[in-house]
Image (tube, protein in one colour):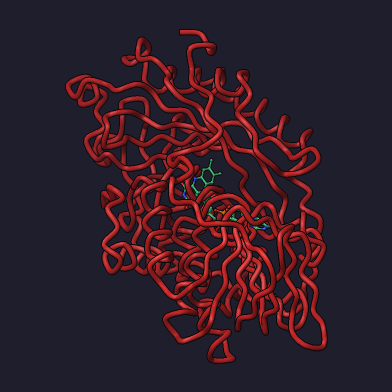
Length: 433
Ligand SMILES: Cc1cc2nc3c(=O)[nH]c(=O)nc-3n(C[C@H](O)[C@H](O)[C@H](O)COP(=O)(O)OP(=O)(O)OC[C@H]3O[C@@H](n4cnc5c(N)ncnc54)[C@H](O)[C@@H]3O)c2cc1C
């Protein structure tokens, strides 16, 4: 199979809907304007409306069209990043961060149920999985740290955890699972459109300016005058001058999907648990089965943003590298074709934590990504809405709240470092094979 036979898609799990709402025209006023319609912005707006606020949501493309419909769909219950590093860097906050991550899954599962979203959610759990003895030791250490912090993770070998044959074992997070994230995003969008929130898609916000009579949010066709504004702009945040400098580094991540795999051949891989998997490389590989009997796999390489963060398709060389990874982890499926490739922008924060705070008076921001926003973004968006209404942060929001909008440079997320990490991973793979 050559990479030319792969469909390179501009979108992920969801295409632009036919009922896209019209762009903003003229001037309107409201209590709160939310900029960005991903999981974070949609959940913030929905909650604010539930609590009686007049809300306007402005989205550059379609609601859910960003990372929210491009991700791997693994609803994970532990924080992203290396827990050893996180607990060393944030010793006082670590237990709170761990609690937040688990609460976020519970919240998201209930949200799916409450809104009746059919997103093919399977409570399979997810596994920090090892493909070498070194990775197995790393997974064991992770499990010990999380267990000490009170999380119900388990360490086990590949057979006990129902993993595909090439995976030696790992740390199971039994809470959470896998879903179709595009269906989840479009389900949230449907609830949003049915709510009191005024939604303007195809409306890229250009400036957000506090004035003596409210905050003015300007887009090409008009503007909104709001008492408060929430920036839920994720990896695109740096395009807005009002967003804190160095809030997050945008990193491009690619995903690929195989064609359908006959059930007996999928069973023969030994993947009885159907859990989502993430390897313990410096830059992980992710694998998950879908309800359409395909496997979605990705990451392996991270690419830094050059210039504006905009529409993009994956590079064929990266798709070919991800395909190599798939074939080495699933040797029995080497003949299965890769059908589709897409990618998305992830926002990596310098602290590896979700962050929220005020960019300036009456303008809040929220970034819940680092590859773990499927649960954390809707949860924190909802908590941020409660803070705006009640005037105080719920505990889990307080854990990630920044008193000042100052951020250190993200040293890791630049092209040479990310290339070096990829090369080190491949050297380690060669040693094992
Ligand atoms: C390839 C990939 C794999 C991932 N895998 C996982 C996973 O398995 N599990 C997990 O938990 N997380 C995963 N993530 C991360 C997860 O998708 C994100 O954390 C989550 O979607 C973030 O939601 P969000 O609402 O903050 O951002 P987004 O969904 O990116 O939404 C931001 C929105 O803001 C809009 N916007 C930005 N600027 C403006 C502006 N100026 N004016 C108007 N609108 C604007 C954008 O158009 C976009 O729709 C992955 C991400 C990617 C890209």
